[in-house]
Amino acid sequence: MIVALALPRLAASGTRVVAVAGRNVVALRSVGWLAFVSGALEPFLYLFSIGIGVGTLVGDMRLADGSVVSYAAFVAPAMLAASAMTGALTETTFNFFGKMKFWKLYDSVLATPVGPMEIAFGELCWAMTRGALYSASFLAVMVAMGLTGPLSALAALPATVLIGFAFGAVGMLVATYLRGWQDFDLIGTIQFALFLFSGTFVPAEAYPAVVRWVIEVTPLYRAVDLIRAITAGGLGWFQVLDVAYLLTLLGLCLWGASRRMSRLLRR
Amino acid sequence: MTPMIEAAGLVKRFGDFTAVDGIDVTVQPGESFGFLGPNGAGKSSTMRMIGCVSPPTDGLLRILGMDPVRQGPAIRARLGVCPQLDNLAPDLTVLQNLTTYARYFGIPRREARRRATELLEFVQLSERSGAEVEPLSGGMKRRLTIARALINEPDLVLLDEPTTGLDPQARHLVWERLFRLKQRGVTLVLTTHYMDEAEQLCDRLVVMDAGKIVAEGSPRALIERYSTREVVELRFQAESQSGFAAKLEGIGERTEELPDRILLYASDGDAALTEVHARGLSPSGALIRRSSLEDVFLHLTGRTLVD
Image 1 (cartoon, each protein chain N blue to C red):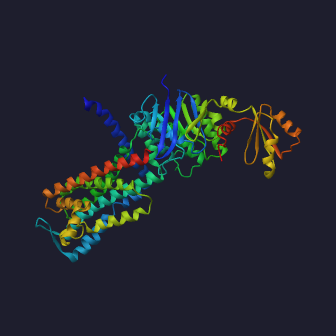
Image 2: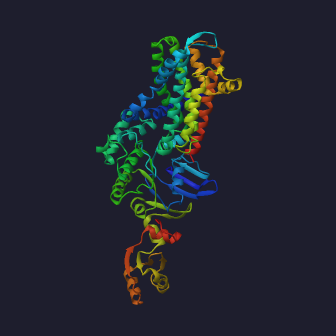
């Protein structure tokens, strides 16, 4: 009975979420193509310069489960995880912030039946669709270069979507606290620090125990750990922890973001 | 018939500041209703509560017979909102601004396109359909915002200062389109600090000042009740003005002293001016005009509407 009552409302809400996400597709057709394509390029640059270039100096890497892989196969999943993070953060901080504060776009959307939670979820879905396309192209190249198997690549795709969702939710929550463009420098720095130290280029085990513990609780480390286990090997119980961690992060931040948005926009 | 808007003892506070201080308003279907008042009178706060985007702090509010806090989405589905500042999407074309907006109401794509095309015709923007929004003039943007507010064929249209910042020609075009809506039987609720706008568009209005309603009625009735039929505007040399007000005592019904002129309220302006001259006073300028809502406002609050 309750389900029967809730279903039509849920369907209407779903339509509104799709409308919020779909707006971005319309905007893309008119102006944003180039920016869209350039976003896919970054992880390839890192993979070729460091994974393969620096890789010739580093040699092979030993993974936690004892298996040995090439440096490029070690770095590639980290680049994938990091680009899922970067893409999601850019979309949800930069673009979301601009739409909210400068275009006042959401003020006009909230005058319709669409609510704050639906806006948050709709924008996030768009960021994820975009991120999933980037991830798929990168995974295809990894398979072509023999850095992972086709089945592993297929398994890794939903994992990148989860990572994107989690960081997208973080970005949205952060965006509601931003005061102006000057705050983006700070975000950039934090993002870069995460990018460099989350077991991306060097395993976390290489650092002193205290630093290693700090690294292991950061979200990008969990994301890298998850993707690397899928594409390079060593899948185990730790990855269940990774998934639980990312799901929790997603839930908490999405809830927080929609609350903040209600407070900012529904005064 | 259920009123479109029903408010009783409606209050909006932001921290210590009371923006709306216990107002009672009822708007019937088909009516054109206005909130007239200076900036900061609480008009926009009231409109945001009516638009179900700002919860009331206290009092009763029913929109289309529903509760704005619990039934917000259902109410907003039947409202058309034209905000004070245009918030059109700069990354979409004129037509796309309407079609994407239609999607928020769950209007199917094909129907959205049909309505958007029709509305662009209505606001005379058809030739700009494929253009970007940014190069449009202020008047065009406002008309597009009005078109966007009509995309869901609303029962109630809310317009917050629909012509503020527009040049006279653009204002008249907006008024003319709004008047057509009114003729179609659409309920309009607007805020304004222009008396001529209120006179043109409103069947009935309330005058707001400092969060309270200070008068209510039709423009005609308000003028009859709070002002005289005619007004004589007298200008004197700046320094000498202060002494003159006292010398005008007994002419007309009353006087109102402004920084640059004295207003003399009388049923017969010509007779009053003759009397002024008969007393040996020679103002540097004199103008006889009909009373307006501005005079009503001045009488009620002691201040002018637009500073």
